[in-house]
Amino acid sequence: MVNKGNNDRRRILVIGGVAAGASAASKAKRIAPDADVKIIQEECVTSYSACGIPYLVEDIVNNIEELIARPPELFKSKYGIGVVLNTRAYKIDRFKKQVFLINMQNQDKTIFDYDCLIVATGARAIVPKINDINQEGVFFIRNYADGMRINDSKISNYANSCAIIGAGLVGLEIAEGFKKRGRLRERAVGRGRENGVRTDSSHSSMDITLVEMADQVLPNMLDKDMAKIVQRELENNGVNIILGERVEEIQGRDGKANGIKTNTERKIDSDLIVIGTGVTPNSEIARDTGIVLGQRNAIKVDEYMKTNIPDIFAAGDCATARNYITNKDMYLPLGTTANKQGRIAGENAAGGNATFRGIAGSAITKVFDLFVGKTGLSSEEALRNGFDPIEDVIEDITRARYYPGNKPIWIKVIADRKSRRVLGSQIVGGEGVKERIDLISLALLLKADITDLASYDACYVPPASPVWEPVNIAASQIAKKL
Image (cartoon, rainbow, N blue to C red):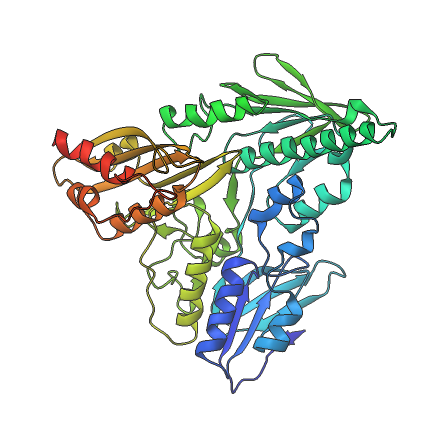
């Protein structure tokens, strides 16, 4: 069946309805209210936060539906945007301007015409080459279905142990989530005993093991010295960490996983196994259409979110983004980038001329009582991009010395010796990390030099900061060396 739509209206078709796709469709409809805007979504829901899944694991979020920002029916009733769910786009005819679809439930096929197409197909979890990975009790953490699967399985309610493969952002967040979930169970057992209720103490805590083949945690985010601070926090909270080993086999019995084996023949028993080895862009449909791919096979786009094919845009976790420090494309799939790129793609598909200024690679996570952030380049990345980096690390406090609730903070700043330009920063601390990372990200966008970062007028009040702002101090330490 061919769906022609209303030929008198501009037809904007969006493949994907999570962060980038939902933002693109909404923006397109605001710019061109009379346009016929449709979202094609392979999943059963739209506009949800995959970043919230670790907090579902932790039991801070009690219902997975709380992660849905805008349900499908809202797009129709409030915005006048059509949504086609449980449907996969499997082919694009760029000459006839048609998208071929298949319903994942009944296998019915449909063809939609478009005037402008936005590809927002996102990314999927990387499936590592591990023997016997497809067993019960092995979970990926990437999309809504993954969240539903781990939530519906109830396994985390009775599992005594969890092995997490990969010590990146997701791995660390899941480690904290399961550890804290185990502590909640432990407190519940304690309350039961106090009230004279018989409880099973063997189910009162969870043993967490993180296995990472690199020699540090957060290998794609932090330098080793900063990563050691994070590793110490994990270990202080009872997380076992194994570095420099690769998981080669999921062990099990009768199709149910019960442990892992690494390349050193180390065996770790585990009731629950989570794979957090990164993601790869869903770019195959674009590639098969003749759209040029870039970094890590993500769809290459310009500042207007245009691909090399006329009237086809791309945005979000399937697309590249320009790094505004190196002026080179990079692939860093984050929700903030996806939403911003989606808005640009939607506006331009509706006839606008908006530009995306790029990213600095800013990212942040929480690991127990620490926040961990990065923006810009590390010294190694700076060297690879032709800079001559200099760096300094300081340890400071987040409030006035005498004010209660003081927390430590470590700040690393990187600058270029020749131009004195600020190149990046890594910050680990008990509070105030996001605000400082955001500030330095802005400094990177404005091409500020190290003296600017050392001299900006920071505000001060004892409950929120020491009298000397730590970022000023870190930047001043570098300035003294130049």
